[in-house]
Length: 86
Image (cartoon, rainbow, N blue to C red; front, side, top):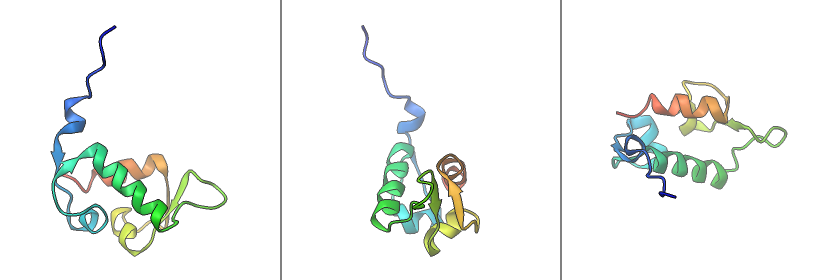
């Protein structure tokens, strides 16, 4: 059986804007790395909601990425984050 190749679109380095760069750094990195770095940041700063682990509570840096929303779901987060990449 052939090994699945990663989708090249996910591997293409994306440029985070200023709001996202505050969380993941300003160098262009692949989408997958951006997601990984956001999760590292969320875990390091204990931003996962205690009652509902699917929700992320925004701190000052993430508020800018989440369009001012105090809390977003994991799924909503990915959509909001992609608006901060080019």
